[in-house]
Length: 366
Image 1 (cartoon, helix red, strand yellow):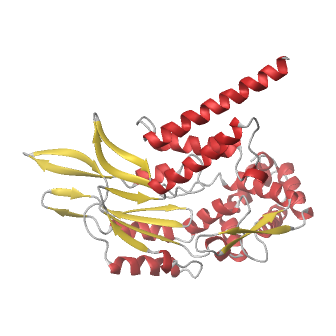
Image 2 (cartoon, rainbow, N blue to C red):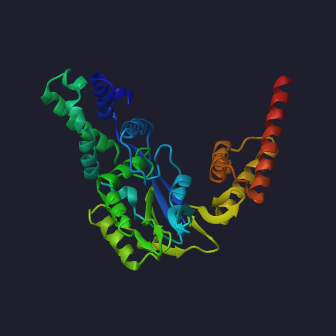
Image 3 (tube, rainbow, N blue to C red):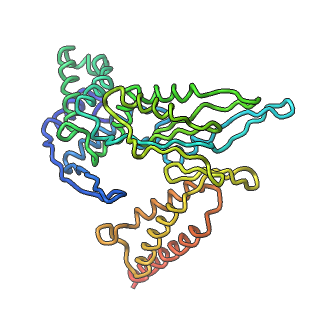
């Protein structure tokens, strides 16, 4: 936001944008099912401007139910959001209870980033930057006509640099947050929240909350504490998503399931009703995710034991990514004890890391 703090800074940013040539390289990454995901990787110059755009647009907050690509929010917060609270009348008293929902509906928006066209971003930037036309620091520095021209250039250049061949690319650092803002500006978030809120009702003295809906990037999750989510509701949210003509749901990935073995799965995190001393233990990682994490940490441990640091280009993982995985594990389980399979692999990783550090220190001292 530094370049937006003064009129000269704004002009400098616009000049950087004007001189920046759009260059991308294509990278293909495997997806589940054997298909390829096309990633458009921007050049260093383009990426630097895109980081600047991201820094600026983050000044506009997303909705409280949007968790993906949002500063200070994570998939753990998204999962916790779906723990339902309700009051139950027991012996004339109301007791606040928290519990795991019984039903969950998961779907996603098909081709989310490429669905956002340049015209959609121009509309977004026009709305976001409209207050600049009356910003005292800018109005006092030049004439109203010139401020209006600069405003239009800003909208044009930001939309140009945030798109590739007229669409928002996967691979740009500003695409995820801009997607959140477009989703919010289109009214889809509010309409879906309103639709979910209509489901609130009272049954047998128990005040059950409405359906809960959250967005994690292009993933949409709806949960219900008690009632089965009907087919009609699925059709209604599909119609809301598609009515603006920008997005559509991926029907192949739409699935509805009920709680099994006292737990449900949201973005790889399990919510369960297992009780321990002091209250319920709501969060955990799915067995599939735990197996994947164990394998990656074990691979890094073996490399560290061999006396070298893992390299991303050679080994497919590096120490930074391994520490990120460990950080996520600790974020999920927080104050709870880790599952024994994860605890063992983390102990071995820490021992290998400490041994490598000691060997390195000894070599330096010699």
